[in-house]
Length: 177
Image 1 (cartoon, rainbow, N blue to C red):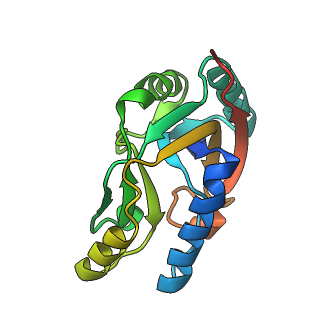
Image 2: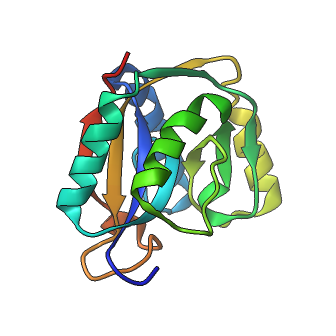
Image 3: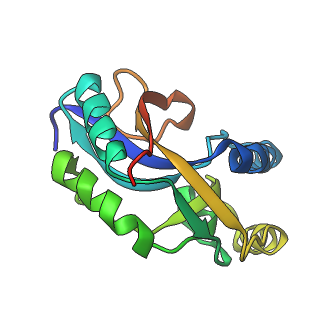
């Protein structure tokens, strides 16, 4: 997987849910000195030829998949930077759209679908992660998702380590029935 444009494909929350999730992520990021990011659920990571192909794929997949509502599970935490504190979500409802993306986008073998919505990207001590997870329990809250977005690393970069450099290269509203 060395050629082409690396992309992550995200499921993004509707405006009403982004209106409370994004400020929460921004506050946690500011409190802990880490870069903020937009609320999302990663559906697929892989490579495409270019941004035009990413736009075409997202448009085709979005035309066949309807907006989704997922019920938040427990808020978990872990040592991994990109999964320090997160809202657990059911993976089952995402399998069809993730499979449709995997058929069209060369997959990154390191990625596997495990639905969650990260609240902070950081390497934090266990006690801090536990406190943040306990203080941000959204279990049972219904989250509505209505877009898919392709995100690429900063120009000239080949991985997603530089969070502030991430750039949206395609967006499509879910509009299937």
